Amino acid sequence: MKSAKTTADNQAFLNISQIDMVFPTDTGGFTALKDVDLKINKGEFISLIGHSGCGKSTVLNIVAGLYQATKGGVLLKNKEVNEPGPERAVVFQNHSLLPWLTSYQNVELAVKQVFNKIMSNAEMKDWIEHNLNLVHMGHAMHKRPDEISGGMKQRIGIARALAMQPEVLLMDEPFGALDALTRAHMQDSLMEIQSELNNTVIMITHDVDEAVLLSDRIVMMTNGPEATIGEILDVKLERPRSRLSLAKNLEYNRLRSEVLTFLYEKQRKVESFNGKTSVSPVVNQKRVNEN
View 1 (cartoon, one colour):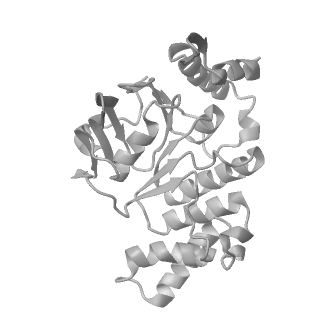
View 2 (view 1 turned 30 degrees about the vertical axis):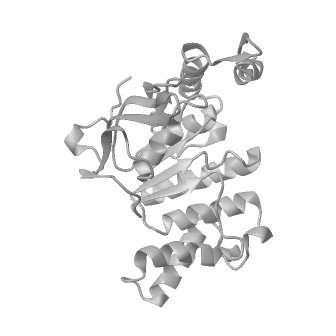
């Protein structure tokens, strides 16, 4: 499936170019990724989805500059990525807030790191409060992490990332630890923020509905080792999107079905238990859910 947004390599905003990733082990090299190639336009929302162990986080870490690819590389605006930088902010499933600091102070740390030499104290204060208000957390800016809920902590983590004014927002299952209702609220907030700021977003998810709801394209990874991109699915659903109106939308359900087919038929996960081969419990649970 070819994306309508595909551009020439030298025009791609973010170019993940034919990367391999080999990790050393006691028994030799383990090839986690093989020939992963993806061109992303500015403002696109990309979801990476696949079974556990398919290298999704490895791709994200290479784009973040935390890993160096064994072969190939990443270009952001035609500049090679070889180390972490504020233009690529990461939001993890664990919010990673410092527990002894308030919400305001946690965001302030990132702002001072990036803007200390170019913003006055008053400008930094306004910018911190702006980003807290952007994620609807202005009312809790003086509360510490142990005084707010899990969803609120994740909002602070997102505010901290956005306050760096990143060109690319990298999200590693940011809502995976939240309950269903809080996760839905966070997804709605993310769509609102991305629409306003036009950030380029790469998000890892195991949630098929989340991927279809949020994405412009869904990148489906094959099973590892030597994981690569299996298929890319264009999501051309009109924005803004409402989960209630999409529930009975034929195109939404077609897209959802295509992702499920890839994950649970084309890339069926098989695991061994006590010498017996059986389908992953995740697959069985998904079948129960689908039935």
